[in-house]
Amino acid sequence: MKTKINLIITILLTINLLTSCASMFWPNERKYEKVYNGMATKEFRSIHPKAINEYMDSFTTIFSITYYDTETKFVNSLDDAKYKKFYYFEDNKLVKVDKGERVVDYRIRVN
Image (cartoon, rainbow, N blue to C red; front, side, top):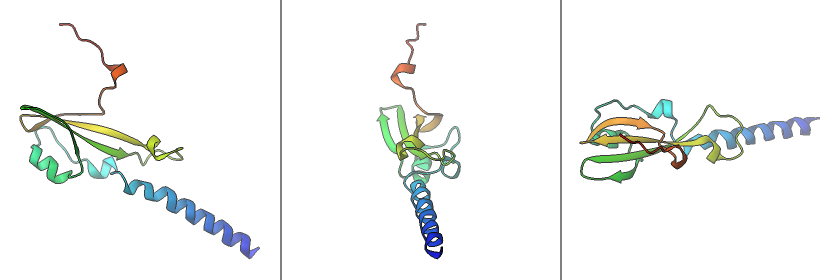
């Protein structure tokens, strides 16, 4: 009886350890995202040093951050709980934040 209880406790602790450590790899959006429209690129980079520069030209810069969805429970893999957000800067000021456009979502716009 005592060995069954010890086994159950060991299994529960192992499961808790394996599932709770996943959030250490990617930031949680609620805790990490502190941005506002008009935010300067330098300020953004100082707050988010792990942001990845996805695109840059003379007027536009796009950064991305991979987040971990802590609301999703019991996923098959960590990839199922990850998502990216993109931060668009024009003239070194934040103008837009979104989750990006997939190729299948892109529509040709005719003026």
